[in-house]
Image (cartoon, rainbow, N blue to C red; front, top):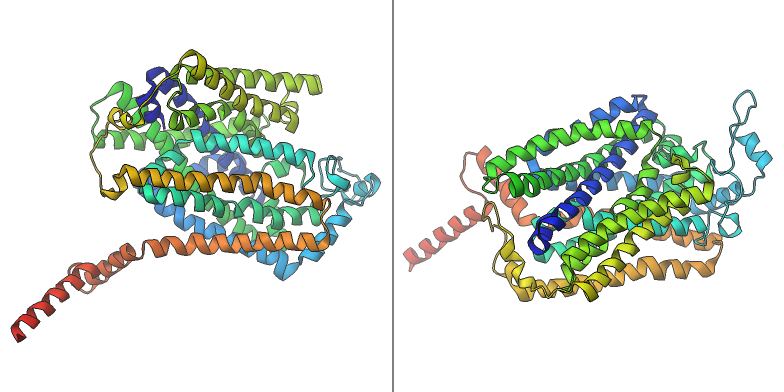
Amino acid sequence: MCEIVNARWGKTAHITFLFFAFCANIIVTSMLLLGGAATVEALTGVDYRLASFLIPWGVILYTSAGGLKATFLASYLHTVIIFAVLITMITMVYIKVYSSDQIYAFLEQTVSYSDAECEAIFSNEDGETFFVKGQYACGPVSGNNGGSYLTMLSGDGLMFGIINIVGNFGTVFVDQSYWQSAIAARPSSAAKGYLLGGICWFAIPFSLATSLGLTSTALMLPISASEAGSGLVPPAVATELMGNAGAALILVMLFMAIVSTGSAESIAVSSLIAYDVYRQYFNPDATGKQILLVSRIVIVAFGLFMGCFSIVLNEIGLNLGWVYLFMGVVIGSAVIPLWNMMTWSKASGKGAVIAAWSGLILAVIGWLSGAQAQSGKISVATLGTNEVMLSGNLIAILSSGLIHYVYSKFIDPQDFDFAELDKNITLVEHDMSGLGAEQQDPVELRRAERWITRRGYILTILLIVVWPLLSIPAGVFTESYFAFWVLVAIAWGFGAAITITLLPLMESSEEILEVLSGMWNYITCRSGNAKELAKEEGEVEEEGEVVDA
């Protein structure tokens, strides 16, 4: 991403968006370690400080050795395991242990309790209550239609949804790991792969929340809001349903997620340092071997740094949920300038720099002012409310977008020729393997762009606008409506698991067969692989036909 910025807009913009790229990687890795360490401590008793240092080593060891290829291979295996645990949890909740009707009844009962009844339920053996309204799932939900959990009409839900969109726009546009994965893939596969991957990924928050998330509320497990914000709902519900086996499954799922995403983030940071700092400003003639050495050093250093940084964040009272909501405040202002860089010929480099920094400054000012205005003081708790985080996120993305548009349209309009972009990007090694003539054909690339653009907009509108709007008339869900909702969640989860497991195997069946046949030939002291053997046998048959003739 930063190399493209430098190729189009130059050094100042390059340094600016390099800063936002590092912020994105640090924030995403912080969330991984904060949630991972809290879960490991809750399930095993290992101190979170020790867990924060041990977890990165699972990433460092194979990432520094295998690089991006190891990340791709590991990501597939880890994703398959994650989805296996996901469908196991869905099956346990809605098929084996409970049903949608039972969960519906439990959720209705949860919101029916009075404050006095909630205090009696959430009390210790001595009869002393630890119930705090709004911190535990008991009683009507403030801001929800009818005080129910079974509705899409939720004030806090709407605010979280907007914050979620802004923050994830930030990660998709600013996080280097997304860009390098797309660049490493074949152009014809990247567009379809990212769209299909997004559809499959949605099963994780949707199906997991519908199963484990709602079950924790239905069973009224003693999980506080801060514990939920630390990511402790899945392990608590899994342990409740399956005992130690459930805890083990969640630990496996957690480790797979952390190592998969953590390796991508480590590779992203090492790429930024090696290519956009070391090669760009210190050693322009760096060889592939030198860049690889720098990358490996950075991976180790970044892992150790993040272990320390996550401990610092935990000590000052920040958890996974708080950092997640804060993400858009920091990196949201870089989204629209980067969007314009790739799609708008008039986009100004100076305007992008001004917009990104101004958006960040305005977002932080609005965020702090919002906390002061709402609560009369600034603290971790007051800065973490939905209203305050929403103001910071919206100011970041909207102000930067407006500034960049006005500057590019009326002050410094450009007329950039996108055909010139490639000429300003230099490769370390001119390795074009996997890129045939078709993959470099401008006509095919434009066709792929149109394909993903149309379907991307359609899917976005369906998920963000149409689906919520269709759920609003339902008000508080009826038992049959909730049963349909659960059915969709189950189908989405199983469909995604099947797709994410089988499709890569089908697409790579020829290469897998070559590898397996080569291994078999090595074991049996034969040479070549299946393709070479078939070719040799074909030549032998042709020679035999000639002799017979």
